[in-house]
Amino acid sequence: MYSIETKKLTKKFKDKTAVNGINLQINEGELFALLGTNGAGKTTTIKMLTGLIMPTSGEILINNMNIQKDTIKIKNILNISPQETAIAPNLSVKENLEFMAGVYQIKDKKNKISELVELFKLDEVLDKKAKTLSGGWQRKVSIAISLINDPKILFLDEPTLGLDVIARKELWNVINKLKGKITIILTTHYMEEAEQLSDRIGIMSNGNLVDIGTSNELIKKTNTKSIEDAFVKIVTGGNL
Amino acid sequence: MRMLNFARRNFKELIRDPLSLIFEILLPIFLLFIFQQINIPGDTYKLESFTPGIIVFGFSFITLFTATLVSKDRSSSLLIRLGTSPMKSSDYILGYILSLIPIVLIQGVIFFTVAVILGLHFSLNIIYVLFISIIISILFIALGILLGSLVSEKATGGIGSIVVQLTSFTSGMFFSKDLVGNVFTKICEILPFESCLNIIKGILNNNLEIINIRNIIVVIVYTIGILILSIITFKKKMISDNK
Image: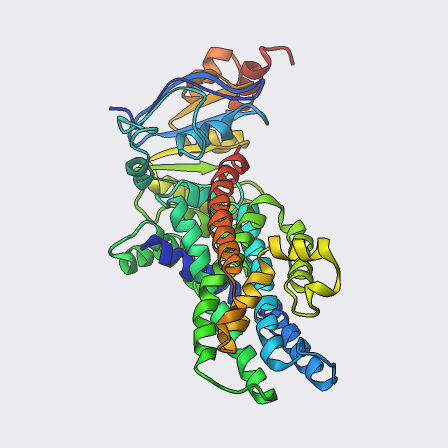
């Protein structure tokens, strides 16, 4: 059984086709990176996979359940850390965690929150208002919140965008700790991030999923030396 | 209960931005106080008539608050996160409404306390008005959800102040509609603010005869209509914002 399976997944906005008939299979426990230039269709794909928007055509199966039929069941087993930090600004870090625990009706919320505080080392900021935290801390809190319901599938939309090197490495450590335990779909513009963290990489261009494979496979296939060169060659068709 | 959980979060967000709350309570109190210091002939500015006006005037700020909260939520990624959660549209709408009701009550209690200090006769009718205020405020909260769903965070201030002006001019709190002319009278009758004021005034003064059936129908129709419209618009905008 695949964690995520899409069949001819398509999204059109009026005349524009944002996602064009994607067929994708992601295994349970896999960390799958979705790469693409701006406007390639990554975020639209993620929004369809999380049930935020419905596809124009095609099918999405999450743990073998259809997203259009079993929406609530599916929403209980996935979570997202959106591109922009998604936290309640006037609430403290602890209150943010409690609020989201309430949204998912977590029974043992005290223990779950303690677990996340330990994993993300949130002790020192626990009582601070979210809006007063630095960008790095806010991002950490945002990702911590996305684990509140023990998701089977986690979407990380550009999780390290705008972070400094230290904050980025810290987040990589956390993501590495989660690897294998849950299915993670990561979108990023940082090639080394995709290479370091992911099991497989999917490359999107103009709404199409143009290639898929491990970083080594993609480098070998394109006869290049790095994942960045491989990405550029795949997206431009070698015309750069 | 997801709705109560969301309401708790909204309430905390609102009270932790105390400047606008203080302003929203101080301005009507200032008006209440200042108009009692000037001896203006007629009944409009007597405490029995003007206090209900202040209550309705305060509701228009509730619209402004709600619109700001909803548009702020829309502009942040928080609604994206919540959109992927099992929360339903009813959880959002009821969560917004429930979080504003304590503020409606606090503001009502403060306005009446000041009015009693200024000379308003204390009676059980004040308690009835506070109760009715909760029901009438749903119209103003729903209007805030509707506006907050339609406009950006920056535009809510402007749109909200239009509602504040419209409430003060068409409710009859400052002058009787009959003084301005037929067209204005018709506008006041069509809009719900004058009806809200009449209902509150009638209950406060134990003078239910001034409440006519049109007042009740107008308030009910507007409340239900705007509530339905706000649910549809919020749901639609939540999806379109995510495109």
